[in-house]
Length: 279
Picture 1 (spheres, helix red, strand yellow):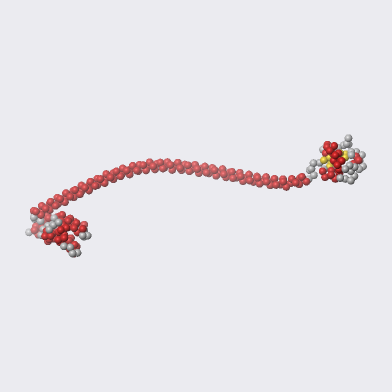
Picture 2: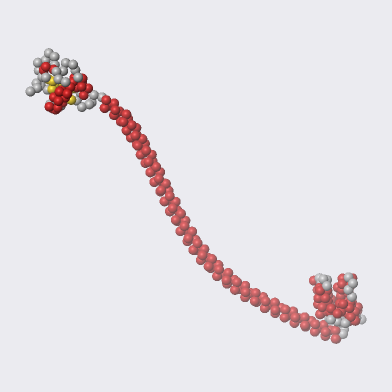
């Protein structure tokens, strides 16, 4: 008696789970006939499943989930797992060989499907692993190229740093030379300024020197009769001004033209201040 009760309670719990799963659809106006058509079973068969007169097979859960999902009411993950567990218990508790055989066939089919799904998933994983291996190899190759490029860049950077240091050293040398040349330019400018001042001073002093009695002195012979109270002929030193005054003096015996002619006849009389007696 315990086994029928256990079998009945397991089947009843499974049927109650199925009714709860379709309640959302029927509460919105859906019918069991629509569910039966969608699950590809007879309406009477669906009624027996829901009343626990028959134990619904495992594939009915998947068909029911698909039907409800198409109507926007899919089974929650926890609900479907619970229905699967209740289905297994109901089939195991059933004393009907046909039910147990059907359950075993469904379990075998489910295992095969899971195996196929696992194999397919394994194939996908292998393909993904191979793809990842190829991508990894490509990444390693890129890393090697990047490392080689990095080494090239490091060498280039070192050369550029050296060139920059050389340029800085050369620039400092140029700055030092420019500073020295600038100092020389300043020195030359100062010397030029001093020379300009000296030249200006010389230019200012030259007219005064020309006006001073540093002129060329001229000499002429003077006879004894040209000097009062003298019996000897003398040479008097005369500059240009005194010579003119003498030639224009009122006591001269000859005119200015004659005196100048006389001076031309005696050009040597302008070399010394005074000579002895004239010949």
